Amino acid sequence: MPAPRSLAALEADIARDLAITAHPRAPWLKPKTAGGLPVLDCLVVGGGQGGLAVAFALKRDRVERLLVIDSAPEGQEGPWVTYARMHTLRSPKDQTGPDLRTPSLTYQAWHEALYGEEGFARLGYIPKELWNDYLLWFRRVTGIPVRNGVTAGRITPTLTDDGLPCLAIETSAGPMLARKVVLATGQDGGGRNWMPPFVEALPPPLRAHAWDAIDFDALKGKVVAVLGAGASAFDNAAVALERGAGEVHLFCRREIVMDVQPYRWLTFAGFLRHLGDMPDAWRWRFMQKILTMREGFTQETYDRANRFPNFLMHMGRPWSGARVGADGRVAIETPRGPFTADYLICGTGVRMDATARPELAACAANIATWADRYTPPEEEASERLGEFPYLAPDFAFTERRAGETPWIRDLHFFGFGSQLSFGPAGSSINAMAIAAPRCAAGVTRGLFAADMPRLFDELCAYDIKQVALDPGKLAAE
Ligand SMILES: Cc1cc2nc3c(=O)[nH]c(=O)nc-3n(C[C@H](O)[C@H](O)[C@H](O)COP(=O)(O)OP(=O)(O)OC[C@H]3O[C@@H](n4cnc5c(N)ncnc54)[C@H](O)[C@@H]3O)c2cc1C
Image 1 (cartoon, rainbow, N blue to C red):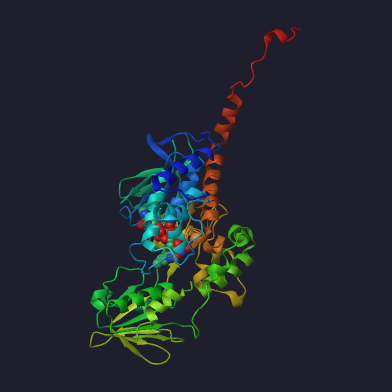
Image 2 (image 1 turned 90 degrees about the vertical axis):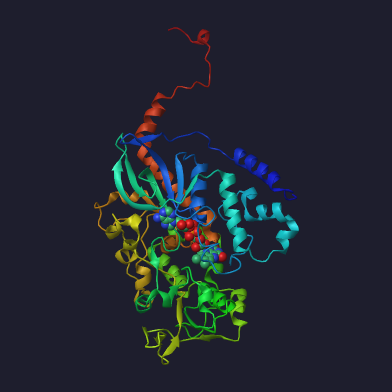
């Protein structure tokens, strides 16, 4: 089949595709109030790709009182046009994503409608700005309601006026109420961007995390030291070099840099669909291996930094301390002697820590982690991974001490931190078509369970006749 010749033609196809696959069409949830105020069926916090994908799945299942909120202004959700410093996505261009396998909603369909089939065939990797444009288009054509510039804060339990559990959410736009909340709050949504404490203790003008806003022009002529050898470390090194840094030195603990991408290996249906169903020992074993290998980088990412003569890699040379010298420069301690730099960038990812998230302030102490639930064999032990939340099969948080915060069963967590429980989920485009419907089904399962008494009454009262009987044929006994 040829691709549609224009975006208008594609959008007509989408309207038709969504209409003819809208089954089951019957509305099934009823409006609720709490204290006389309207209650959403579901609030999705985070309008990045993960939040949009879950919201799309919920909308398709007729979760009608649905809202997505995002702190960022429209068009700046997620990393793509802010702190993502690569040129292109690292995912292959033909993966499905938030489209949830609706052909006309895929990135490919959008790209071909704009730039032709030839244009897509010529494309290597997807430029990150185009991916961002696609996500904005996706949200418009699917009609997902998003309010930008709204930040969610503390979430606490309350009841609807008819006595069902619901959640009260403090937001920068005033209080909101929802029966379910999906937290699709990104890489640091389960904790915070992490750097070694001795780097964090340095004055902010001397150091940054790779995902911070960085004034690279101010690094012209300076010696920049980057910690980590993942993709973001290389991206930051490359930008510093392109903007005229005097020298860029990349340090990592490993003796040999990671030259494979474990997320490529795991991109098959068995793993993406079923890891979450497996015993803890296997879930831990696979994800411990993958998350310890960490995100690999592409040839393009490497070449972009490596083409500069003033770029050097220091393998097997971790940092063990750092302090500001009398000259205002930073002396970094390493096992191979000190190193002096003007500015430090840490490509060191995130640490899970529910206490760091304002949304979780009322329950953080009672969110069960993997360390609470599973003790791995010594050779697989990891303090960092033990901090990941131990999620229920429906992506909800589970309680450390049963009964103290039972309402967290209505808080579903879709992001990087859900990886240890399910493998890549919100955190990765490759998993989205499988993981987002699963998270959405967790939400609808809970809504259905809570509504069963009302639904049973409706069944008993159901009187839409589909047959008109002939009274003349009914024998009078
Ligand atoms: C630099 C970089 C490059 C990446 N490249 C790839 C890639 O090529 N391929 C791939 O598969 N994956 C990639 N990833 C991993 C992953 O796909 C991205 O992190 C992606 O953005 C995850 O989507 P998300 O919706 O979970 O989170 P995000 O896109 O980060 O969206 C989360 C949103 O939540 C909002 N938010 C957070 N807290 C609140 C709050 N309290 N209230 C309101 N809004 C809130 C934020 O403003 C943000 O817009 C990359 C990640 C990074 C950081």
